[in-house]
Length: 607
Image 1 (cartoon, one colour):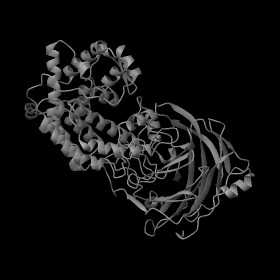
Image 2 (cartoon, helix red, strand yellow; image 1 turned 30 degrees about the vertical axis):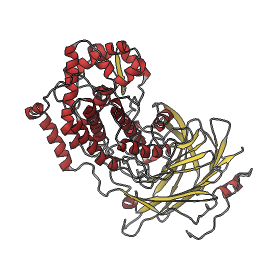
Image 3 (tube, helix red, strand yellow; image 1 turned 180 degrees about the vertical axis):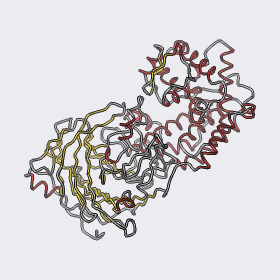
Image 4 (cartoon, rainbow, N blue to C red; image 1 turned 90 degrees about the horizontal axis):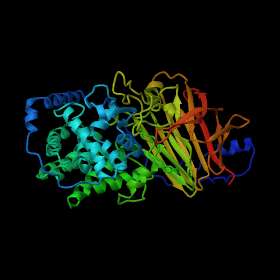
């Protein structure tokens, strides 16, 4: 493609026949003179997650925590009181709180009656166990019980039972990240658990808080870089501020965060796990930790505000016109309220990042139309166990209507999805992108026989964004099928300046010689999963569909050249975990001499 070519004029929408529309809709996309430098993102070849040495070190640490030596290290004076109560920036779930007031701890699809609860019982689901051991139910209780006395009457017996069950080290209950969460909940909701006039109980709670902090003095720094370490260090930092005599502890935790956060938060504000839910979680965690400083009338570390100011615009750049952030790399879709609440706490406010050269996400927007593209390799297995094989997938909205989407994710949902569905959502076929031979662009390891992380596949993604008066253009390619099938996948997108014309071209081309000596032709499918409420009607020639949006009677015309279109069932999982029956457009074909090309377009019709 010539960099010196003049931009072609983008035709305006008009009434036309199916054949005319097909010709115009799949016409060559405009070319642009000015372009951002080409971005090349590489996933470390042979990534297998944590090394054998790291896994062995973790096992050794867990063994040492059970020894009398570690128990002796945990001994010490306990505080008579906490120095302050930080504000929890995240509101609890009122429905969960109401059930708790009625005597039921409900989370992750499991219900446990509080009257006979045994926190140490082996049958608890992993999600429920971590939530219960992290005392995150205090947040839900606070949301529904403004009367501190009534809430304390429910919370304090539960705390007493938990302390009785886990007085000594237990691998799951005392896991460093869970302990960090528990400390933050205990500090942020101290009035619910320390209002008792029973001095024995109060002493037991304060002693336990001090003991967990001493445990994290060592355990937090033995975790690998990742979200778990962030939770452990945040809890340790808050403990250093709120437990008397903890200046050295707070300083050590802050130094740990100063080393960790640059590894977790990329230069453009994206999160290293590539899951927006992790970016949201980290931002909320830093806001909570900063409030610990405010609680003692101290100025929060500048590190927290600076990191928050980079995280929030990156998250806002991923939101479509409905205000939701899509489900990317394991996380569920994010509701608009969470993002709005976070924006109020960030110095950058309503700013957003359009191009993520490091995060791999790119945003095209014009008029009412917004497009978000995953133009980066999957996350490393060592930092993310639940990534998706979604390279070059995109989502697309017209105002509040989600027109093209991915099917969804699981992490962040209050109730887990069925395991087969959860795995299915991670596949390439569950995303609006091209798949070859019904094979994921990046392998998904078997969770039953491994860690469920992503394996071999996409190692390199090259992306370039261009812009002119005619619109915005993105070209990206990935090598996920190079070693297996000897081909590369390329996607080109063009969004017109008025937002009424989105054109694309997906192509398969032979990889460089040496990638695979023998290439066989393969079947492929190009999928566009439609948003909830979008109704698709096929055109008479079978090469397109009319898409009616759920709001305002608006419609878009889809056309493709090089294949026939089938309309098949699909689904979308919303932020609450509700499954919506939807449709998908599927264009199938077979390569010829390891090559194929499909040109397509979405054009708004009418007003």
